[in-house]
Length: 212
Picture (cartoon, rainbow, N blue to C red):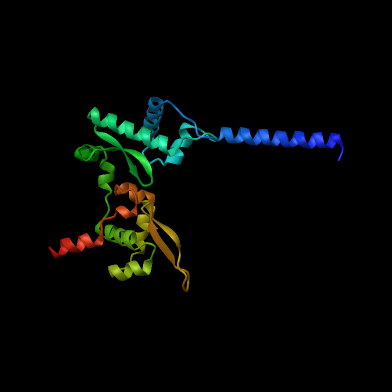
């Protein structure tokens, strides 16, 4: 190898190293003043009516390749909730369906309900609630299993729940015909105020109440 070739190779390697270092630095976590970060989070959450995951929140507040750490976001949310509590506000930032959302406190539920008449008018029917409960607790579940539990055909009810974004197809069973399996959606968690399926009431609790 000539001296010229060696110099060229070293120059290329040096350029690549510089580029990699620049990319790493650009993709590193950034820091914002605590007060500014809290206000920006508040503005983002007020602009949406759905839970916002930490990754999405970071993307909005610090466009890639930069990012905000989950720890910084959690700390800012906690500081906002302290401010809301100290100032007697009617809402808090809560974790819901894998994200954060500004929610009205329970004692003001009547006010929220009055402002949401459309939802009240389109509440779920008894058969829909029964079917949804079976899917929530048994998922992933076949339509045949749901119908065996309820004792009636459930095709139309399941279709209606899917149209309302409460139920979705989550896969196919490994059996003859590969029938579809059903499960709940993130919208289901939002509508029923659940952070995850682990927050569903325990079946044992229902049995205890029934025995009482």
